[in-house]
Length: 233
Length: 127
Image 1 (cartoon, rainbow over the protein chains, first blue to last red):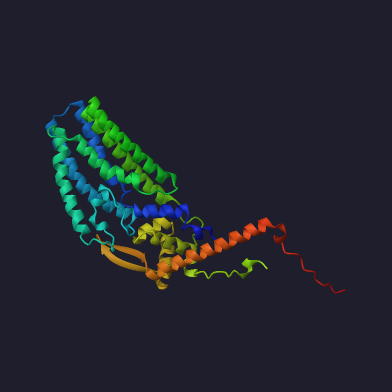
Image 2: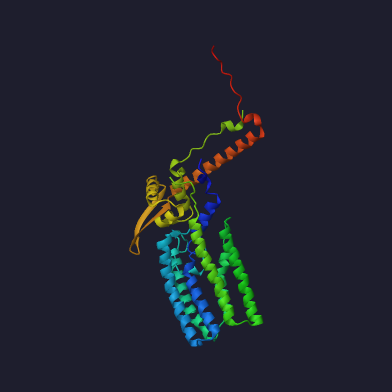
């Protein structure tokens, strides 16, 4: 009898389920360029070569471009990796999936899911376009609010999703947990020890960049695993 | 008489049992629907083989294939039918029953060395 016959309950089967359930969340290249661009911007802000006004404009353009990139990169992933509709009940995803209202499962209980996600995305766009340049301008900047939002949508969900026996999936959770602890620690350091705002921002976006790059790698790694070893005709 | 001698081999659905088709069904059972490209990448089957297996599964009413145009390209998606889901569940149940029975027999055989090989029957030799 083929060993493949038992892989429903095996690690490979679990990995496959993890892959399909988190297919959109693992598309790390949708957010990675944004974090990369923000990292460059904060480094430039720290060097002090550019005026705050210029940096604020750059932040505005980068944020606006990111929304376009979310759409384009989503299409790129579809062309390269295919399309999967997540299982029911849908996995509560982070910010990445909110930007893609079409991910609504067919049998989802809430029929306004798409509209709600769309409205949320527009509100988020307005908020991001005003908030991020605001940080660079230096007025009414609330780094704590920024960090809490990023942690809530980008990092915390990665810490709570069930993981499989696979080390690479488990490492995703470990990385997210470390990032979360570091984000809290760095924030307290910023509040108490008054470390430089740009150093704090650079560290914050570096963690997010790392997490998203890891997600992209994980997607390739899981798709590269041979789920059907010895099962081809 | 051993109690397991009454064991009946469960009936195995040949449509599901074939490894390439089982791989496709396992992928589809883990999501609501998936397109051809994802199935190709996840199962590592060649396009031709995948296409043939999908057709067989569709013929057996185990999966449902839908073709639609999206972003100016044809998107072929497949999803399990209710019958397919039932067939897959039944398949895993029969596999589990088989595994449990095999395990029981193995333990029993390991416990009593006399049962490992049945005694030879004397065959009358004509001179």
